Image (tube, rainbow, N blue to C red; front, side, top):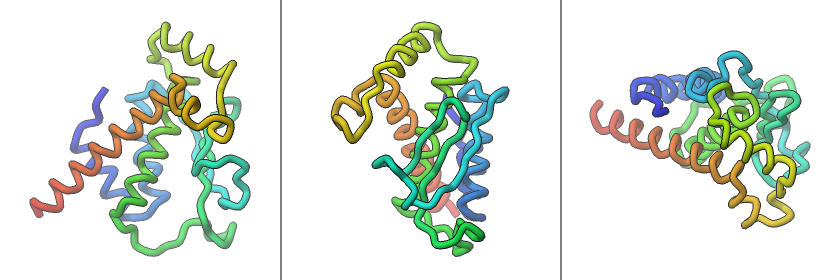
Length: 168
């Protein structure tokens, strides 16, 4: 299901108010698309030095939580208050949140095709981590579909952003 351009514009406007606000609006916008209204995942920000994986984020199925690893100095003020720049880093961040939300969909979405659900479960049982074999990691169905979803969202967000910027 496609996210309407108006909703993407709302997400972009939320990011202009701050990273945490943008992430929450993006998450809330993806819940109905991904069949997660009854089981919305949490997003928890963790200092990047506590990450034991190679990525920027992880989804934990049992906790239904996305852990996003950020570089920051303080637990008290985890997300810097500086203005958000609409640059490659921010669009990559949105891609990652959408990617991890898709993992929540794979685990808890109520609109997952039964055949895909079976394939996701089989993949989960023999999951390949990126540090073990990056090529195989990217090609397994759980990751390939999550990367495609994140990439498609990022592309749509960039198109809406550029259109909006050019037509102000």
